[in-house]
Length: 162
Ligand code: FES
Image (cartoon, rainbow, N blue to C red; front, side):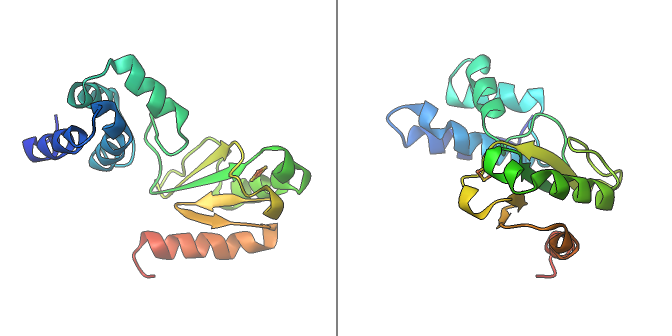
């Protein structure tokens, strides 16, 4: 269950639009924050009820967008583009290096819950491939040599030092 204050805030937000469905993305963003970075089944039900749409519709949106998570993720999510431009520019080496540094395979979360490493379809940054996103930061023309600094920056951000 979510606090009544949050439910009211989200419902009021949806009421601003001619169709309450327009508010669905916002509702999911806020619920993801509330549930600690992911959307459990309960969040899907809550969103459906607040917005007034079937759960299957909410599920469709929650699984379509890369930044909604239906399983728990680490504090920082790293997404690595594996589409054609990035692939041709060495994305496999980037993923391999990240896997080695983090001690996990793509699709996994580090045991300490700090990082989740995921593949992603084109980040729209193809002319600066290979591209990855760490949290909400985009990194371009990434090389294995850049990874240590990128991870150090991510750790600082996660600890609120930057
Ligand atoms: S192919 Fe990687 S950003 Fe487009």
